[in-house]
Length: 267
Image 1: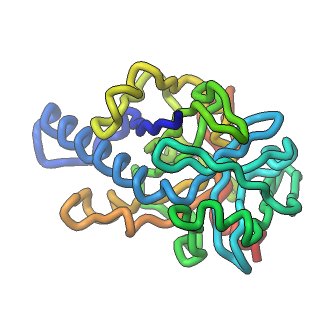
Image 2 (image 1 turned 90 degrees about the vertical axis):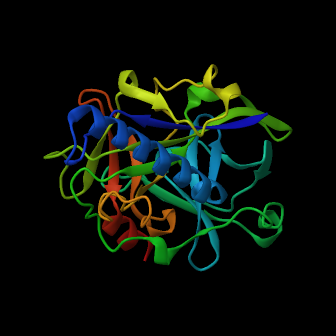
C-alpha cells in the first residue's frame, strides 16, 4: 500500500494589507493550496531509492531518461521504486555516475528502455527546461520538495511497498547558506498536514525525521513572485532550484545544492 501526504510548516507571513488574524488565515490557505497542487504535478517524476538505506530520486531527461539523486544515496546501490495510484514498480537503474565529494554529492544513472517501459504510461522525466539557470527566489518564496522519509516506510521490496510519500513546502532561511548551498526550514513542531491529504493518512504519517529526502529536487514554486495570487499562479510556473542533500542537525535546517552547480555538473 502506498499513500501520499502533503505537509506545510508555519511559514513567514507575507505583508498583506489585512489584520494579523486575517493575514495568517489567508496565508495558511494559500500555502496549503500550493503544496497540494505541487504534489500532483511532481508525482510522475519521483522515485523511492531503496538500497541499504532509503533516499529519493527524480527522473530527468538529458541524453535519455536518467534518475538523479545524491551520491551518498547511490552508494547504497538502490533500486528505484516508482509509486502510482497505490502500487509500486521496481526499476533497476544502470551504472551510476557519481561524485561523492562534499562539494558535489550528486549521482545519476540511466534507465534503459525496457525498464522505463514498465512505468512509461504514468511516469514522466523532468525536462531540463524546467531547471532554473540559477537559484534566485524572491524573499520568503515557497520552496517545495517531494520524496520519502525513512520513518514513513513500513516495508518496500520488488513485491510491493507500504510507504507514505511526502510533499513538503518550506522557505529559505534568510541570511543563511553560501555560494554552494542554501538552507530551508525544517521545524517538525510547526508542521501541519494539508487539507488535500486523505484522512486515512493523517494518523499514520510521521514528520519528525527528514532522513530519506536526500536526492529530492527542490522547486521554486514562484508563488510569492506571482504576487501570492492563486488566480494567476500555476504549478507549471515552478522551476527546479536545487538538489536536497542532507539535514544539518546543528542548524536544524535542510541543505540543498544550488541549481546552477547541478546544471554545471550535469553538463
